[in-house]
Amino acid sequence: MFGNVVAVMAGLALLAVKGFESVPQSNELDMIPEGKPPAFVTPGQTYRIATGSTVVLPCRITQPGSYVLAWKRGIAVLTAGPVKVTPDPRVRLLPSPAVGASVSGSGVPGIPELSGGGYSLELKDVKPQDAGDYVCQIGTMEPREITHTLEILVPPRIHYVSHTGPLEVAQGATVKMECRASGNPVPVVSWTRKNNVLPSGERSVNGLSLVIQHADRHSAGQYQCSADNGVGQPDTKHITLKVLYPPEVETERSYVHTGVGLEAQLVCLVHAEPGPQVLWFKDTAQLGTTEQHATQARGNRYTLVIRNVTMADFGNYSCVASNMHGKSRGNLELTGTASTALFDSPSLGPDKDQYNISWSVNSHASVIEYKLYYRQQPRHHHSHYQDDIRANNTRIGFRNDWNNVIIPGYGVTSTYLGSVPAPYPGVTRQRMSYIIRNLQPATTYEARVQAKNEHGWNKMSPAFHFTTRSNDMENMVEPSAQPAVYGISQQGMAGYGTSGTSRITYSAVLMLLILLI
Ligand SMILES: *[C@@H]1O[C@H](CO)[C@@H](O)[C@H](O)[C@H]1NC(C)=O
Ligand SMILES: *[C@@H]1O[C@H](CO)[C@@H](O)[C@H](O)[C@H]1NC(C)=O
Ligand SMILES: *[C@@H]1O[C@H](CO)[C@@H](O)[C@H](O)[C@H]1NC(C)=O
Image (cartoon, rainbow, N blue to C red):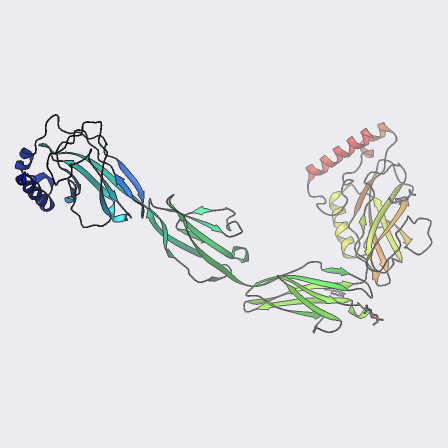
């Protein structure tokens, strides 16, 4: 009995030094069990375990008898029989439950039964360096073993970011941001921008670096690189990109229509990095904050408030925005004249020889008179287009085929007046209509209008097109009686004479309309 114990102990000691293969034969001979040699119940397997977690590598055998079961890693013996050999405190042996009922004692007192059915190896708090092969071996004559492979999954970690503080670049520069990450499996690094898409328009791109060509103010923002490999949480780092550029100024409205006694607001929208200084001028005189003037800045919106507008306040204003990268100006005109007229009568009239044309302007002061111009739509588009250019540039540049009518405005008794809402303090929409007589049937005309109030004439309206109706269907198909092609356009000049196909479409639609009605 005692001899056996010594032999086992000696064997263990030897194992610890030389490994399991060198188990002395005497041990084997001394401890020969009855029956078949043991076999493994658990096959060798690969385990993928995240760092920090605990893994149990199973090793269950049949017919345990008195064979010594050892766990090895490479040439290092971790355990031998019930004894833990490695000093690593994270390693623990767990007896496996017996397989079946055929458990027989070793008959050696003082030594725990070799196993119920083997020993599993528990490894706590696994680390990347624990990766590798773990062998469970039974000391039979021909050693038998199974091999478990441990792969350690490491959550992603970004260990390098190209820019830690805010990244400032000049407008037009090429920006390269970089993030490098480790982990197992190798993490995928992706880029996004907080509350925005990337400058390329994509929501996210993969890659260790993000390159932005020609950075401009739209490229600025908080970028983030994120590393993900499916283990644990993705790791994320931020890079704040500032693009430095001179001010860019837009005016909300370049003509501000107002009236005496009103409050007027002139608005410039300014983008600049770093933030701009914005000054206001009337002509060349800088405006300070006075009882009459106040300046406001909200975000990129800079406002000059003119309280209680007087005649002297009308004129040209500018906002001048500057920062260390440059200066820019927005021009605005404060005017008491009416806004440009908008037509609202239908483009196809109900009559064949007359047409009720109507429009409105916004004006604080009552409109004194309107000047209405109209003529048959010319058929030669090119020369007509040039004519329109001239008409835009000067009020009296019309060819003599224009008819013009002067129509008294609101407050002046007129048989042509429609119902106009009573003027109220503030800028008012003032409507007007006029019946143009002696027109040709099924013919397209164009019209423009200008309004005059106590502050003068407003800007000439763009051309408006209307078409008279035909009573006679046969007339319609005669080429000379075909409606001209601009009748649909309400706003006149926009897109004028640019597209032949759209013109054809318009006239086709118009024909159809006329035929249907
Ligand atoms: C606007 O100015 C006029 C003349 O200076 C003054 O009579 C009027 O009370 C002012 N109105 C307001 C609202 O300040
Ligand atoms: C404002 O400036 C424009 C040219 O930019 C000029 O035609 C116009 O007469 C000016 N208006 C006043 C009231 O000075
Ligand atoms: C002309 O049109 C205007 C606006 O639609 C309307 O108020 C007015 O009564 C019309 N005039 C006639 C004579 O039908």
